Image 1 (cartoon, rainbow, N blue to C red):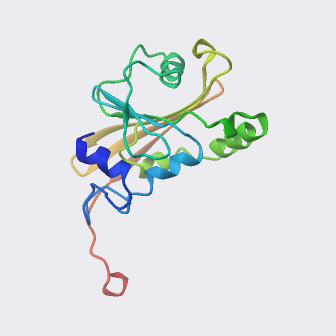
Image 2: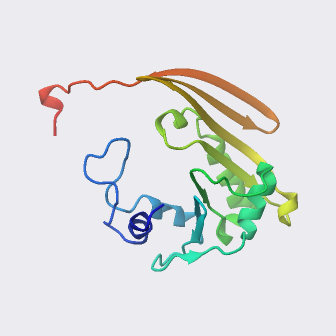
Image 3: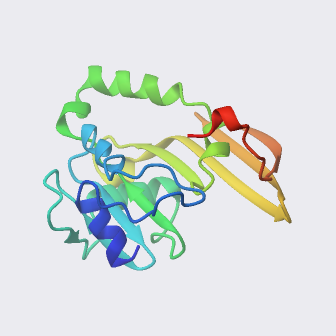
Amino acid sequence: FRERHVRALCHVGASSKGVGGSGYIGQKGIGFKSVFRVSDRPEIHSRGYAFSLDQHMVVPRPCVDASPACRTWLAAAGLKKVPAQGTTILLPLTEEFRGEAKRAELAEKIGEIDPLLLLFLNRVRRIDVVERSGDEEDAATTRSMRRQDVASGTASVVTLTDAVGGGETTTTWLVVKREVETVSWARR
């Protein structure tokens, strides 16, 4: 994350993506803000920098020490620290989703996510769902979806792994990218 990316997250209509940018969706600066439906203090860890946002999203707060949410995820993922490459986003749940009924509803919705989603979120490498009962040492990953790419020219071999409740399913896909001309009636 660079300063302009943080500013874009903190303001509506301040997207840092640019019009017509390749590989990005969204432009209005409201997509990320939807995380506040389930988390009141999302954390972003990116290449050695870490900050959290509250629902007002005016000033990002630095994460000096690992938060309870971060320690929980690290313990469940079997990691000692947040990976140095890429960006990690943690979404600790609001009080509303800590109740048993809402938690069960959320678990059901998460269970409905098809791991094929990662084929179309080509910048996302891993989605972990971690459940904590008590302290961070009691954390358990209830679901982990991972994507691994091996690129060669315009094609990639993409391996998707979905680990749920001790079982693991792996599928492999050949993804070929090429530009196609749109038909005149389909242009905007």
